[in-house]
Amino acid sequence: MKFDKPVTRRESIQRILRWSGCVTLAGTVRLPSFTTSDTWAATDKRFIVEGVGQTDGFSVKELTKKVFDAAGGIQRFVSRGDVVAIKPNISWARHPRFAATTNPEVLTAVIKLCQEAGASRVRIVDNTIHDARRCFAITGAGKAAKETGADLVFPRSSLMKKMKLKGNRLNVQPVFTPLVEADKVINLPVAKHHSLSILTLGMKNWIGAVDGNRSSLHQDIHQSIVDLAQFFQPEVTLIDALRIMTKNGPSGGSTDYVTTKNTLILSDDPVAADARAAMLFGLKPEKIGFIELAQKSGLGTYNFSNLETKKVIV
Image 1 (cartoon, rainbow, N blue to C red):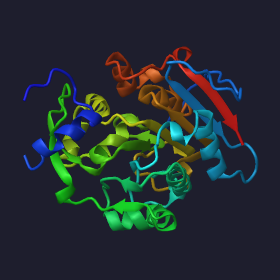
Image 2 (image 1 turned 120 degrees about the horizontal axis):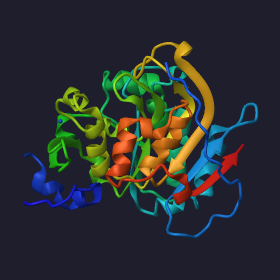
Image 3 (image 1 turned 180 degrees about the horizontal axis):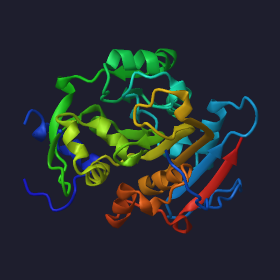
């Protein structure tokens, strides 16, 4: 079969059966000015919403809901009867206080929003690096699944199917099939430092959506990230920046590496989401290889003037 362009996740749903069975930060950055208006403009532009918890003891659940409401509500992304796959970063057996994994309170809040929208099933999907059972237990993902009734999908070989990514670097790669079989996909990464790519945010989170020799993906990591982002195109990305890891990433291991930001970033533009998150580290988006490459590849933009922007505070 001939492919003339990168194969997206939606296209892959139709092809999966044919392929089945067949891999310290610093700086000063001027942050974009986001409107706090309650009115959402009905345009064809992509959007980005920044939510910040400023009150003592603010509710993560409330902040998550307000961020989605500012973008038109969870119903804009999830319809009744949908099977929804949520892709957190729970690859490391680390307690949430280390900011190495997606905050379980945010994960729980997103699951419940999907259920309220009428999703028939919600699945938590990540191909972990540490032992999956330990990751589920220590990161809080297991508790989130138990509390909400979401499916916690164990990564196993029977769920990995080779698929043609048709990237500039990546061609055929084993893909975690619940992410391509779902009706809707929500990318839910944590914002943190990475020793090779500088940061790991939304687009890099897709490394946890494939299998095979994943260490080889790091040999040309920026292009690998963009190739994966071109394939896995979620409905929306929500970046957990409640606590960010500023060094010794991606696994961390000390609260000395953690800074509290109390921020969530929601966007249907994967480049914009990562670009805004990079600014929380004091970094310019154009200085991050995969962000610059993704914009040049047409995946999105870090020119926020081209987006509908909004900010919510709780």
